[in-house]
Length: 204
Image (cartoon, rainbow, N blue to C red):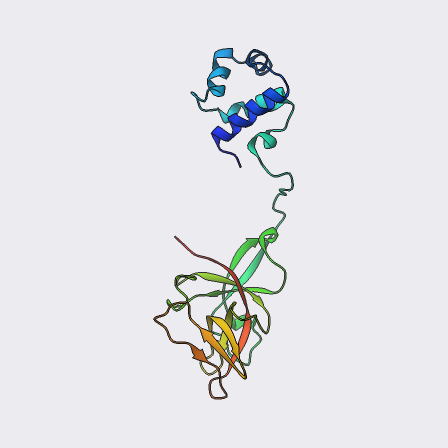
């Protein structure tokens, strides 16, 4: 959406395109010519409560003056996405006992697929993902090299967030923080990829 100066520039541009003088625009908006001149000279901030008057005078919508996209649709509903805690390796991911809470999100902002949130613990993925952030995960059994995944460490019944690298018969779980060591999957240290990390939300 446009700021105050950009709105004035749009009004000036539309006035020139329509060959409207300041006097004519003042007449159409029922304002003093001196006031309109100050907007054009940018010596006075444009009052947004006059937006409808100027839109009507220029034969456009207020949304066009503000630069609101034409394809912007109102939010039609929300979805509650589960935030997972400890995950028992034999349970389905979305088992009730795995869910700590829910985060409500607008449907229009969500990608496709089965989604859940996982709370980041520690600084191993810093600075990419801060400690305590809720990371949105799309459930899927594998990810591409270099992507961040939610991974179940089955010996510990705990999910972690790490960058994935496939190497022959093993999977490397790589931290973004160089202070932490990679985790190597093996028969003694089995893992299961729960899904791909898409984005995170964090409290300020």
